[in-house]
Amino acid sequence: MNPRRPTRQVAIGDDRTGIIRIGGGLPDASGAPTEPAPVVVQTMTAGYTHDVDRCVAEINKLAAAGADVVRVAVPEKKDTESLPEIINQTTVPIVADVHFHFKRALEAVEAGVHKIRLNPGNISDRDQVNAVIDACKERKLPIRIGVNEGSIIERKDKQRRKEELGKYFAGHKQGHLMALMIAKLEEYLDIFHERDFHDIVISAKSMDAAFTIDVYTEIAERFDYPLHLGVTHAGTKETGCIRSVVALGSLLSRGVGDTIRISYASDPVYEVEDGLELLWSLGLRERKGIDLIACPTCGRIQVDLFTLVQDVRKKLATDIHLPMKVAVMGCVVNGPGEAEGADVAVFAGDRRGIIYVQGEKVANIPEAEILERLHAECVEFQNRVLRGEAKLGEKKVEIVPPDPIGELGSGFEKIAAGNVEKVAELTVRGR
Ligand code: SF4
Image 1 (tube, helix red, strand yellow):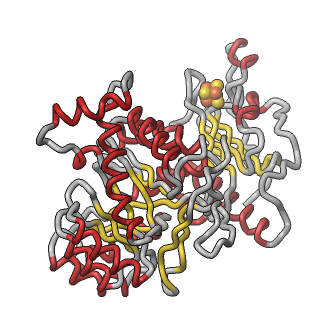
Image 2 (image 1 turned 180 degrees about the vertical axis):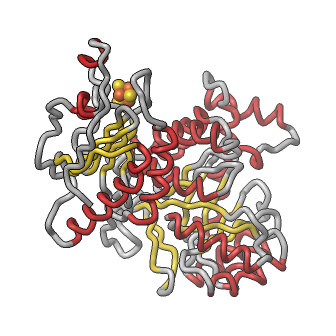
């Protein structure tokens, strides 16, 4: 992991939502140093903004899932007219996503929105851009300049532009496109700089993961503004996840990127969940809730582990708020080693499971009871941590099962002897 790339810093939000900072590391306008802020997770609502009740419900659901900032589309006046009511009923900073009509941006600023997103590909008239810059400057609102691949291509004279710009990036298979995006960005930034406006976040999204990595790398070298990372039109969660994580993970691991939005053609809650998981996995944000370890299963499996893991994930998501490591392992052959360091672990066997809490064996129970017992042990362990009686990540006893395979009824020796006995109930700590 490389250190975070130093950038200017922007701040969004107000007293009610709290202030979310994006980027940092370079001095602010007064010359005071700034610290890089944790990478911010954003998403966008999928419903109509003018449908106020649904929009509010969706924003609150996304905030509960962990979104730091939520963007809404404002294609029509009725959308910007809904913003004051929406902002009043939500607690995260709201970004207005503006395309084609600069007046929507002015209306959104007036309505109290916390940030504006503009697309140089469809709002390029200098006077119109100036009007938005002036409105945002007056209210100290940042603007994201988003040069998405899909909307930036000038279809007129496309061949000529390719020839003109391609030479700058000769050798790159999409060099002309990268040159066009960067040229457009430079052109647009000139308008902002002429008005001494620097509360800027830049994005340059593409649907191609490799191109996304290349274009953001170029932009990171040329500009010192914070970067909003994303792969646009990434597809469904199943395929979009790979595209987004490979591009964003690669950039973030090199210190590039200050806020992210994972885009799926699915419920945006998944975008938030996966964005957070990506940042947690890279150690860029402090994990909230369980860190679930699960084995991939193999021919040794003797319980329905796929169902169990999903059930554990869902059940613990609501009740466990500490970054507790929980392992769900299909057997005791590799389980103990692979789950080393887990605070709570279950090793399954012949339709049974043995549960450990920080190395101490606390139960040996039938498969049907694993979920409830594991949940109870996690809740109790969380309470002990909160009372100061235990510490996360502190392994008191090594998990060295004396003969847990035998206890679970599927020990190699028993199997080899053709003598698989019924296992006696071995509840270590009664409940
Ligand atoms: S823990 Fe056991 S069941 Fe799971 S993959 Fe490893 S050996 Fe197979």
